[in-house]
Image (tube, rainbow, N blue to C red; front, top):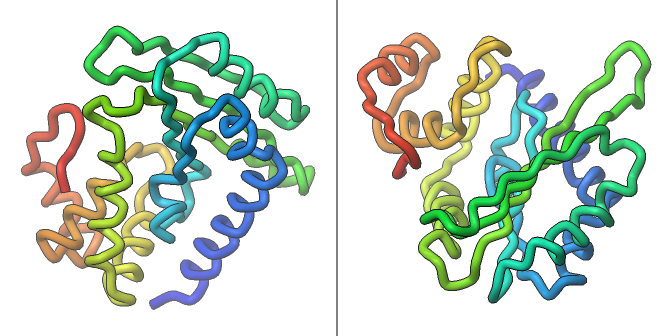
Length: 198
């Protein structure tokens, strides 16, 4: 295993946690009474090249004003360049979807944009805890070897190809894919429609 790949992953994870702390994301949503859970690749220790941070937050009712209030506390930070919002309250998802874009210009030659996805979900709805369970299931199946394969596949994926993390996890953990060539062949055979089950 290429130690460089492990180093990139660990450095990006360290940076992600420092951004979370700097923006005080958890307290911003706790201030409106939300339950706040880190999800996604950062939670699972599988963050690689994609600069993504994922949170799911839950309240007993979905109040757009309160959700905006929480996000405004985060967006006060001048490094947040852009915020997008989608109202999905009256859909099966029962949520408000936020995407915040954080500009990390610690090095003028290497400006990075981190995407922070915060999904504000109605407590007790279908997706309450759904992705947390997926994360737990993935983590229960991980071994050092599997972690290394997943990180290597993510590293070898060209930057212009967008692949969801769950695709890597399903391929490696369920179907024992080991190389990028195998992964592309595996992916061509899948019929993904909507949310992918592990």
